[in-house]
Amino acid sequence: MKQFAILMFMVGFYCAPVSAQNASQIALVQDGKSCAGCNLFQADLSYRDGKKMDLSEARLRQANLSLATYDDVNFSGANLSVSNLFGARFNRANMTQTNLENAIAVGTYFGSSDLTGASIVGTNFSGADLRITQGLNQAQLDRACGDPTTRLPKGLQIPACVSPR
Image (cartoon, rainbow, N blue to C red):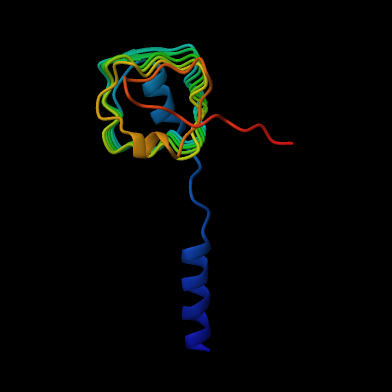
């Protein structure tokens, strides 16, 4: 019986719901304040103007940053996978080691952002401007997609996005 009780405790502990997001942390970022390592899962950060913020190691998975401006923001090590970055501006952003997998970056401007070591597998860069980014290489781009209007650094190319049938 004692072993059963311990087993049930362990199952409950490992199966306990994980907090999807932290509303107070989202509010901080919506107000333009830094929040390194915060849980911003599915946060609506669209149409915001964030400058010189520290969002390093933050969990921004499935967040909406569409049509926002995030200049000089530190996103290093952050998880922006499956996020909506449509039409956003990231000028001089630190995106080293950032997870951008399967993000929608259509029409996004990356200015002088540093994408060294960023994972961009499945990211849609159609119409994006990546011309003056730092640390972007062909191996990264081979796992993403774009279209003829995607602007890249000289010598680099990107596969075309394939629409589902």
